[in-house]
Amino acid sequence: MKRRHWLGATAAGLAATAWPAFIRDAFGDGAACDETGKPVAAAGSLVQVSAAFRRARQASRALLVLVIPADDSAKWERGHAFGELLNFGADGDLAPLAGVEVVCATMADLKKLVPGAGDGEPLMVVVRTDKVPVVATQLDVVIPSYDGMRRMAGGGREEQLKHDDKVAAQRIGALGALLRKGLGAEARDVEARAASVRARLVKAPPAGARWAIASGCGIDVEGAEDSGLMACGMGHVPSKSRRFLYFFSVEGRGASTR
Image 1 (tube, rainbow, N blue to C red):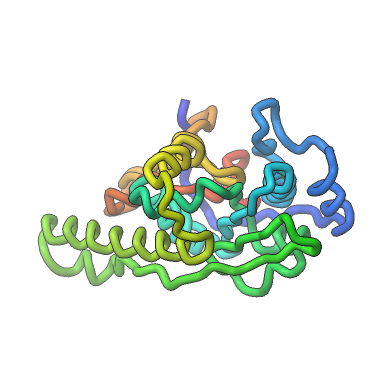
Image 2: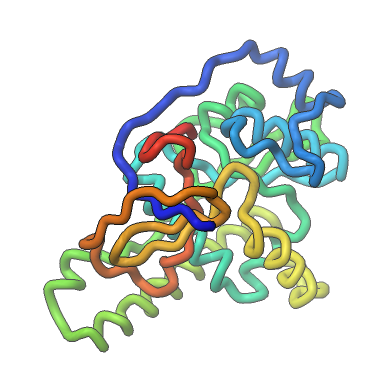
């Protein structure tokens, strides 16, 4: 059963643990995953990124971190943008993801594992796990905004929908170009590689996040067990933004654990 969930603005911090322990966790054989190989969902982004780092290193792949912002309102914006890319990106946009391990994590938690990840909150960070010390590269771009207030103020519904589609294409294009720049734009087997990405990251979410669906009456968090609060009046949600990456805890209503 899906859980209908409405966010508040509270945040809960993760307990800090010494840096060497996470290096040992990332490079060692400690179990931080379930029987399917995915990180334990309740563990928080620090354990998620540690487990993903270990999987990437064992598979001789780079790690791509989709950065979860500290600010709750920014979590919404970024989660919708990543959702648009993964759900509606063209083959050429998604194919670069075929060769990397993908995880969602905060910069604070990533830097406990990779101190050289840099400052700020870029959209993504690529971690080359085959280097000692590891090499991290930030990937960032300005994502076009739907500019909701001005869009809602003018034009009819048909114009609004056309505007939504135009802006969504710009947002997806910006993120796809960023991935090609940061991960490479290999022309080989683009269709097959994109299909593998959709099977891995669209049917199920990347580690560290959940898929959710937004409507004018609340949010359904995919895979959550119980029903929560329904709140109509949320307003218009662009069609390609409706399924998005949800960066909040579903254990306590509205509490962020990222």
